[in-house]
Amino acid sequence: MMSIDGFEVPLHRALTEPILLGGAPRTLAIVNGTVAAALGLGLQMWSAGIVLWLVGHSVAVFAAKRDPDFASVLARHLRQKGELSC
Image (cartoon, rainbow, N blue to C red; front, top):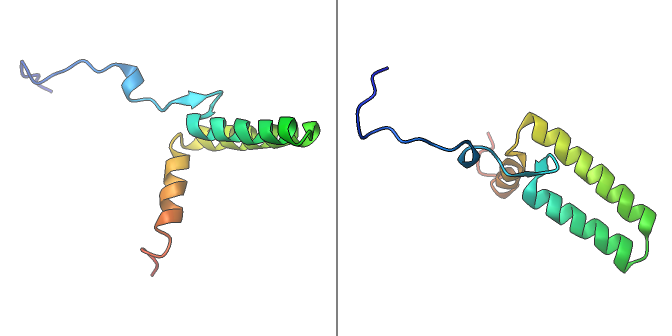
């Protein structure tokens, strides 16, 4: 492929990769950790908070390995549920 001067820009890899936190999408990991901390610290249910965090984070990491943008795709699917029904 021929390169034309002035029409090629170097692109840093960080601009194209998804932002993950511990292998899970950043926003989902923060929400999951916040809810688990509220359950563990606020309601004094330590074991339930740890289990909720462990299960939630594990599911998010598993889903992110298959598709790093699964959270935004799921949100869009839930928002447009009846639009594309046959």
